[in-house]
Length: 426
Image 1 (cartoon, one colour):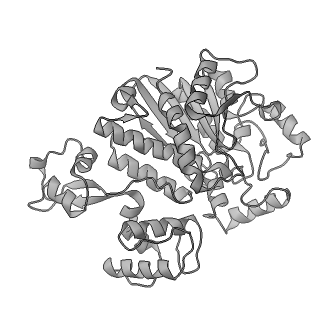
Image 2 (cartoon, rainbow, N blue to C red):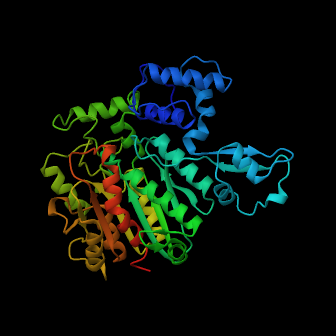
């Protein structure tokens, strides 16, 4: 994370405010503005942590706060420690500690052993704006708390950021959910991350999600989640990226499209290519359609790129999907409360029935993609390539980017889709 000090603003400040509150130095208003209250709380934390209380969050402070960013810490076992005493010392739940340390039996603890301790708060926040550092922390924290989650990188962004994926389950029925192809639709990223956390917690406890026995579900299915396909673009939209050469280049590109507000109207990757117009399914038609509308060069939205899969993010998604060959895909976007289910005349078996099931669960409408937007998308390519059900889910209503205040409604509407998406094809 970058250095934060008095006057800083943006999603990293919100995350700092959240971490200080989690550490017991709040509560702070999570407004993303580094003012006097945040500075005072930070100085008190730095003093307690044995750091110089300069009121600026640099590398040492971020390291000291890391457990409050990720939701877990590592405890080095000392003579006389038990899992119960370790949990009590950190205010943790014993069952959560046992879940995070499978196979580590209490009598076998030895001095110097490392014990993962989940802290008493959720990993995935749902009340602050997102940026790539938070996505990184969530991926790390979820995999640490729930070792049965497989965490991996399916590729890198233009700026070299990891494109994370999480896998839950061991079943043969593979499904793949992805979010934030479009930068200013970033609210879909916490939707998938929170779903992963809720599903993992229910699996560990032997519980249910949306009426589904999670252990049974994940014995039959494997759910793969790519929560942030476009991390560079997300950072631009939410203000994490607010200076430097990539920001300046994006600002120059946006100047060529003055009707699109900058940076809030930015959908593309940081190089100005719309990632959901990059797939080899009618790409030439998409190019024709978008060029006719004036989107004939890199910019904030609707530029198809120089060729299919010319953007590293779309290429990574393409390669990963080919290797996975899932039975079903869900691509999360905003807004409109619509489920798009078809590409041209392709109508995979059961795809309409599943779409109608999803509509009944969410209250969303089932529609065919408008012609002008109906080519070169991930869903289009998946259906064409595999002849299997693929869906674009347009969440929420309003003007993108939707505010984080809309999260609860969006998540509630989509929990049934996310859960049963792995069940309807099993």
